[in-house]
Length: 331
Image (cartoon, rainbow, N blue to C red; front, side, top):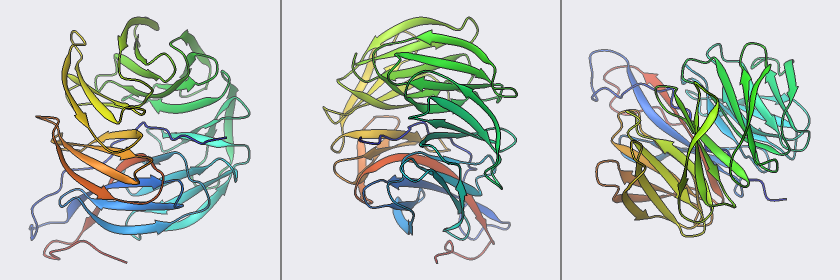
């Protein structure tokens, strides 16, 4: 089976302050999950250069940052494990043995991990320190992408082979709703104000727009063939959709869903994330093993960063370092 990553990029970082600042500064970093290479590339978002490469266990899939930006979690479906990466040290500091086929991953406001299990059709709440199962619930067939709402009240998972999403109460994992969407939903993201969920439906080549107030579909947007990743701008006015088979990012106006721009990127794009300052978007290109950097104002590709084989998913974090250091720590 081909493991496909969760796109859902969970921004938990702070804006970088100028070099030689008078206080500790937070360096914005984007972590790229390279499935085939079994590595995580660390990209300094100030320069869009590779700052480090972290080896991980075989076939990493989903990736997420904790709320402080100090820890990255990486799922390994074929090993039943989650790698825990210390952002400052740039290394794996422990493995959580969770069993099953952990695929998508999201982090709650209190840093509880929510993990979708592809083969067992469950979502599990996991203690991030011990890997202990706190709660578990059955959802639809082949749960893939998983996200939390901005305020942390909801957990939403895309059920790839059930053509639905499941909305869960984050505190209890009680099912609030199961909502039909298009065919083969995979990635999903929540609008910054928490009022909408956008769901990428791979086989029907569209995006479902779900209201979190009514827990009903309110629109369906026709997009490019095989949408596998999506993200919103920080103000929620733009939606970026990665169409895998065409290698294109399409930017939509979220008021009327008209197309604002299209941009060719690398081969088979998947994960999409927007920088903490809202100026750039990053797209993981699976088949070309690189990341496209886009200007958010124009959607123009600014740069292509070579990362590693099977670049699939992205997470944004930040690491603080002392003022006056001039450059961030490198291992």
